[in-house]
Length: 144
Image (tube, rainbow, N blue to C red; front, top):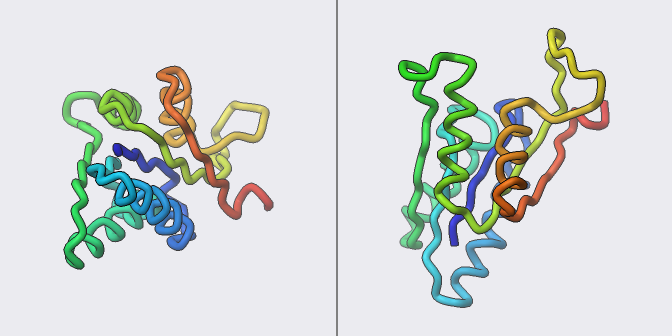
């Protein structure tokens, strides 16, 4: 099973990330399937929690492949690189995308409706277009 984790860098609920990954990993054990975790390698938020989850399980002897696809800022620049990274994650052909979404609170955002942070929204929309299952968990900022 291939799983993409995408989410806001402001995501703080580590347990939610770990719980979702635990459930999917247990499913792969039931059918003797390989498990590949794909994420963008951010140093905080959902990506960090996914990385630490994989690292802890690997240290305990569980078979997990971790694929980190970082934005290529040198090639694409600061605005396009994260979006290109999202495309590359979706092109890996995941079975499911776990999206940990916080509400956009960017004061310069021109959208007039409530929506998730732009990077998470971009990855989710690309997964939908590719007909990949998306499981979205909304964070605490949706209630504020």
